[in-house]
Length: 444
Image 1 (cartoon, rainbow, N blue to C red):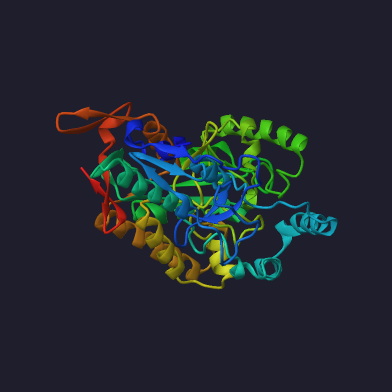
Image 2: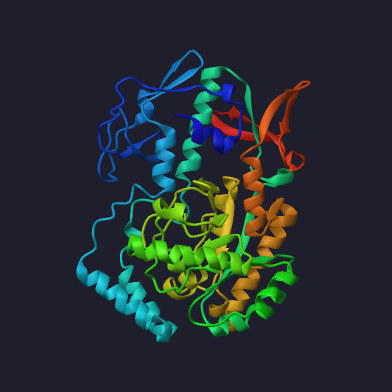
């Protein structure tokens, strides 16, 4: 009932008390409902729900009851969070045969198609993306805002002035940013050395996702050169052909080879090609973290999105969601070489103290205006690191921290609280408080 909330905040178990309202329809089908103004949830609710997002969703907040220090809820928050994080709210109807054939033909031809043609085909395929009512574009914070509203209810019910929790990032950093590069072509692989020079000039290290069995050969010399400069090497799909999740048995064979590539590359992380994904099958993987789930997937071939700007666990795998628009989509789908969209996304994510994660392909930094756009982004991140205490980290560093934090506990200490657990010296105690009926955070 409250496990996802406790995992999110790492607050003391006794600080909050949530209980499911009697009559919660366990046998009913999940659907959409509001949890207060503007916050759309998906799951089973005693307040009712609808199959589609409409302007008049039932509001579960109206049925919340505070009984002493207990919050009685008409839905299970952990189930709702999982429905979004696993993208279970997306109706995956069986694709018609012509669509499957079209996709198969496209990916067989894709390596030889010029970008100018690909972008026209993709714009046609994505037509109407900006009319989707949910998830919210350009950043969806549904899961994070749901937990925030639950924290507000817990504060009201308990009568506590503030509830302590383990701050989200080490050393009290405000948010986290990580840069990743998916290498799709031989020319992109050749550009990795120059790209590392560009990144290093701003003091930002990044990870390179390498395709192990198609398109090019990444020698051990190249992989070692990346690691020797303290950048990361991760595995990018198997063949990047768009078919990884087409069939369960085929997937299991591919997953076994991907696990071998993880060992061969000395990697901890993975990203699928074109962000195709099926989180229900992740138990076949043996890597530590994945970076394949977009926050909002309006501009991706597979629709959906995890609706959170925070890392989360899928079994033993840590998901580091893609929370900003890819460079390819910005340049070639939206036709923009401005960083304004990225700035808007950064601002919204930092309001939530979340993870700002980027995919920038070395393959598409082949023009001066593309490189100028990218260096402008790096300059902005470098300034935020100084002025706003942004943590710029490698994916592996985020994985290590989030795993440590997931095992930390708060214990009373003198007149306050102390964090215990491996890595606790980097952790900070924070407090959630109500100010003008809104939850605010204060670092100790």
